[in-house]
Image (cartoon, rainbow, N blue to C red; front, side):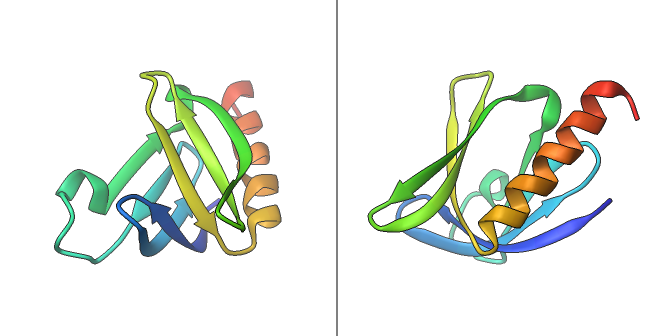
Length: 98
């Protein structure tokens, strides 16, 4: 399964890009050259995700992904409900080994 969602990373303001959901990870990609390469292609493997929560940035609905290293990444995701549903399905399949 691979699904793509328009999203903005809440990092020094809003940084437009895409969230790509596959069978093993969530990847955030942006073409903005003024950000470090590790942010331009941010990979969040399911095995390192500790929490996924609905959140808000000002008045905008966002998703916060907490990692096992303590870092949190907040995204404004268009079609947030669909993203959260598909992320849960993908993470459950990953955990069960399917």
